Length: 157
Image (cartoon, rainbow, N blue to C red; front, side):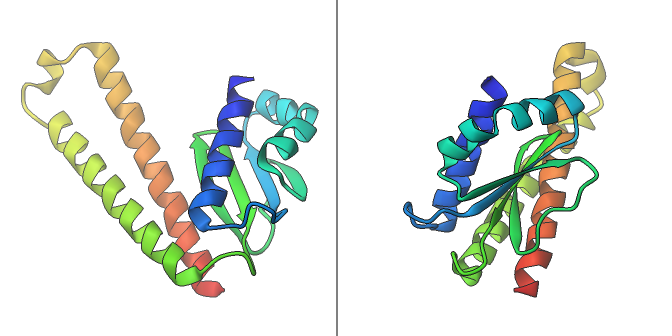
């Protein structure tokens, strides 16, 4: 249930950040790479649709392609959400938002990588913190790749 609520929260946040009107009923897609997570979304599709006030909800498996005209959002390493935005948002404003987020993520990733490359990092930092830092770097890289895809999608609009 936590995953479902977090996904709904991120989708609502994504709709708000795009400036989608609250009375609009956009098409939303959720892609889950994990089979159990996919099954949970299929079982709780109406709940997620209600949480996000979506007109249509599409649940995708990891290998399926997202619908045309959608922008993606990052929930976790195994969950990506998509909102069909054609006719709903200002493309130039969204490109500026993506560029700002890319800079933020790049700065965070570079700062963490520099910290991890320090000579005393391996001996000074506990194993669980090193593992968490490695996961953060992976998360940053995944989100940056998602943003790159969004830029390509926006420039095609």
